[in-house]
Image (cartoon, rainbow, N blue to C red; front, top):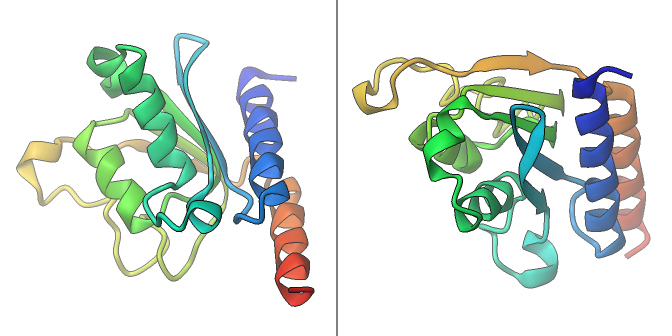
Length: 154
């Protein structure tokens, strides 16, 4: 198994933890030189705090561990395409690359009409990050199906 798949499998494990707690199944990791520097488990629904997205929590974790100076060289892995809120954070910290499983068409930072991950019109942000989509897409879609079933049973 290559490293990208290994990291995405760990994101899927984190997403399953989010799902167990009634949250959308999103898990995220920040990786620098094959070392995990930040982890995030979606918890916005269970905490009532919309800012508790997995990607934001992974960045906060990396910052708390003193990794501010390497975020611009890090790779963010997530089961889902970062939303516009998370995309703003990604661009602010100039994260170099994003790898995700499934798109989020209405609010995704790349696939929606709000292409925050792709814009180069904001000088402070510099170059846009490299983006790789569809890694373990099927496994991430299964998580979404489980979440949809959970919502139906509530």
